[in-house]
Image 1 (cartoon, rainbow over the protein chains, first blue to last red):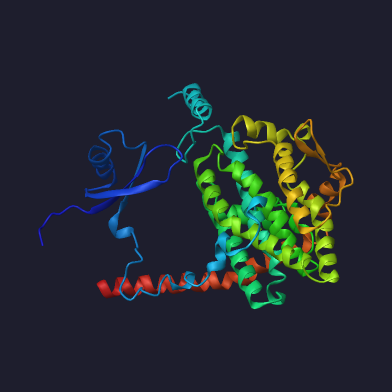
Image 2: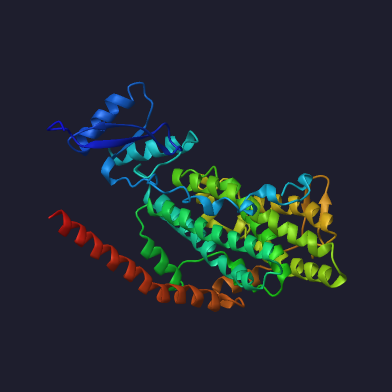
Length: 94
Length: 315
């Protein structure tokens, strides 16, 4: 492994007020301040955002682990969680 | 930036129909107003589980039971979205919970009424959730970003709540005379408390006017109440049920239904703790909190033990 590689950060950008921050990519930086400046220069050169979050990649726990095929199964057979499951007259705007 | 610059920028954002976001400067009263409204909204979702939870074990079919479980589960989720959104204003979950448990914070007064029959589950979905949706659709345009986003998500999920309730009412009104009477009785008991959910008349609501100026609220209590009445009359007609209001009639000139006076004395009495279930609701929340504490403690102690052994292994 190469020595001296800087830690990995994930970058989230809010496109404009009212929207969620969206994951846009990642970068390597020494600390949060550096990560923030690099994120600005890398991802918002054309005013793509009004707010940036940077998070150390190692602090993110993702659901993609091995044997997770069944992880989302519980929602599969619960069609009654959707409004279209119910037969009510459409003209009543329920 | 000086205070007046900050105030000007805040005013400009509101004026431009943009959203205020968590790290923005905001007037302290705007923040407190939001904390009050959002935590009250969250508490309503959580306490709102109780009247319906009362019927999970007695739902008439497995289908209805699965649906009711899913609905009550949603309400808990909606409470969580709202508490999380409120936490972005610098108030802690513990503070909000504590205010509910000591009776300082309010929640929707409608949940202080009892669910006496299965038809009440139908009526709650149809009327109470129907009223909540009217209010929440309006709040999707609220000026505080995290609140608006929570509302969008909640509205999407809430649609099934109303429809399952109406479906229950359809089944009952299409059934025996006794079932139909049960449906009518539920409508009779839930109608007026549902109209009270929108809060005092605009002329009586001081909080409300400031909230409108800040665009926390987008439509007034009376406007929202009228919208609900207008949409619900047709729905009751379709069921063949009579709304318990002799003054209810179409007003051609206004283009809306007129309706009779609301009993505000009852509203005040129930808000102040005089409803049939106020004590039981808070007691249930306190019990859940007290009896659930060991679970949190056990989870934390397990997590701490494991993080320690992880460190040991690394070492």
